[in-house]
Image 1 (cartoon, each protein chain N blue to C red):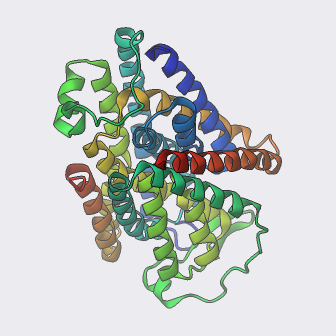
Image 2 (cartoon, one colour; image 1 turned 120 degrees about the horizontal axis):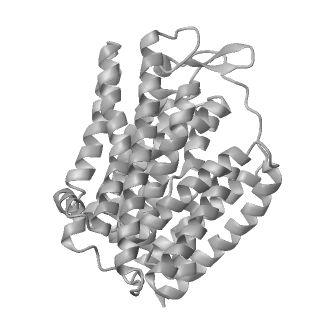
Image 3 (cartoon, helix red, strand yellow; image 1 turned 60 degrees about the horizontal axis):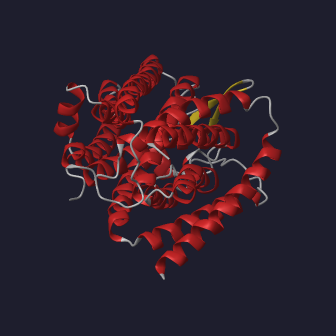
Length: 278
Length: 129
């Protein structure tokens, strides 16, 4: 297989990953890395590097639209980015220290967790009625565009959210994924933000988090231009198409199919890690 | 930030951030695409080697190396420049936020945003060597 063939296959795979990632809201990174590692035998460091830059592209593209619509809470995002960028730096640092087998197994566990989150029944939490002093001092309370005009909301659990965001950043830097699932969980569950505000603010933060790890990856030589090229150029149009198709497809049914795929990839990554170790 | 307390300055900030992100991604895609064509035309029939990690040759590892390569119009150099533009896009968004929080006289957030900006610059220029 020469470079032209290799590049075309990776482009097609990345296009599909971007499409499915946007359609299900789980993001492309969780599919790209296993696809490159298991399907093409790429070293996990190069795979994470290529995935990371594609994550910056898709999240920045989508954030451009959401910010303009006014869902994104920029103050909450900026404050939590301190935690995610710090975490990302440490995660990217660990990526060089940990053995490849360990990274592979951790990747599998993170995938299993994201399947667990999306299958779990969502308890509906009541929106916080009273302001939280710390969130108020940080000027985080805001309003989002509802059907009948702006709907104000209060932000809660700032320290808990901050801690979870540090973890999300570390996972992102270690594995080269956006870790949007953990970010949404922190804002939706712990900080009690409206769901649409959580998802758009998570998306807003993913680009900055990924850029923090990408700097480390770049200086370490994990960003290979020849590999990143088809990944970025595939994921970007794939995810654009996916977010447009979102309106027409039944997202719930697709999510189930996609979760079965992720479950399979998770077990495969763990198996890959264990057999590598021996 | 929308709703009851919305200021024209906040709306302005959202609009500029939106254009900044879109412009950065578009510019990067064009550079990566152009570099990709040159790269495939020159090396398309060679064998890929990604199975074992070697680290990039020194010229892809640092900012000046990538820039020098891009301007010599080498395919991989041009792709590298496109990737740099992509990484710089969120960094530029944070830099712009510092400026717009200054304009809003929200000094608490000027400080918060400066911390994030410093962490990003640290990663790009030192990368925890």
